[in-house]
Image (cartoon, rainbow, N blue to C red):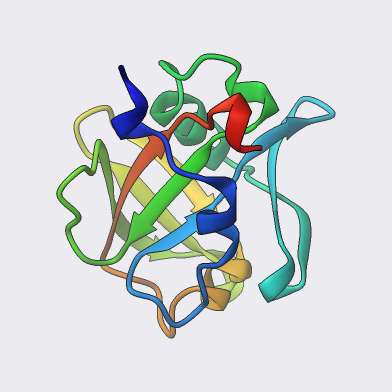
Length: 137
């Protein structure tokens, strides 16, 4: 029984901006990784400029990931983190922030929507991905 690594979508949706551990549900739309977060007024917010490749990496072992998975992340170390990205620099003209996954050298840009989850760009973001059980959708 591998249910220990699955959480209910309702739990993910109930997370609030002020929480230490954040939860979103990325999915594929028109060939892009996107997510919705009604609590932040975000609809089909896209991962681009390398962040999409990092999302593909963290979710590579999740069956049916294109239909959606749970992404849990925090600026604080979380016990189940399977990926850590470190702040590299501010984006061009101060827009967004670049993060690097040091072991692989993968780099990704996170747009200003990052500030809907953090008051300032974190020095590191710890993350893990979980499958969504079809019974829980």
